[in-house]
Image 1 (cartoon, helix red, strand yellow):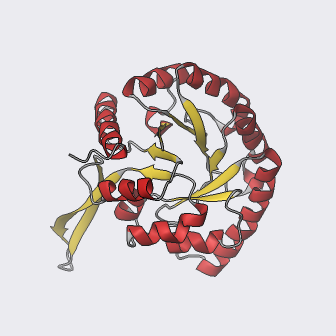
Image 2 (tube, one colour):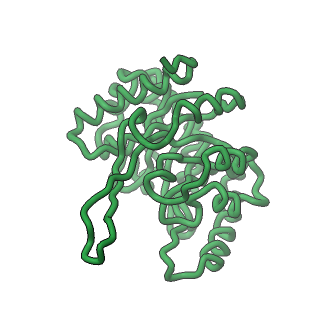
Image 3 (cartoon, one colour):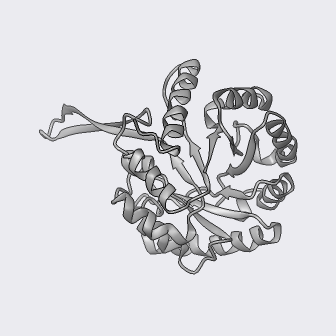
Length: 273
């Protein structure tokens, strides 16, 4: 398993600075964010190969990228997928098919399935693999819901991207073992973050308000020692992409990311002491 750093925390900082920081922290590679205002803008897809060269020069692999791609007609899909393929990025995370109760689930799912089929065909022309992340506010928040989208998809074309932190802090909660069993045929990568819920003040109705927040990997509700032990035992060899979604000054985010990575590396070696 490779430890890769999701570049969202760097916002629009230069690739060279990101590469130096990620390598200095000890990461194996990069999860390259391709989004307006982020590391690479989708409309500047031609910059992807050069960015990957810079990361590799710093000793980092770039096995995956993250996009907002769902509808091929509203995203420069062919250019982005082609540039990723040219750069040797083999796995591309898709965007979100959202659920807000204004449109029936069956309608959203039908649209998602249709668009996913189009995207899978397009990705096949570039020999890259797509991935659906488990994310709150979508019709793929849990393992069961994500499997409903993946049924019938070839695992070497479209993969699953479990994210236990999202399931704990957002929605899609289910037994983590069930999540991984349901998605095992499609398992492509795993999102790594942690968080928890906290009791707040009583509302006017008398009900207790609750809030969630992101926490260090060793401090939240997700049992990462158990999950990583399971991944080791089952022979998973895909990327572990660490997400540093901390509302802290940048230097503190870097410090917490360093601590998180050390925690994960101990687990990867089987040293939980």
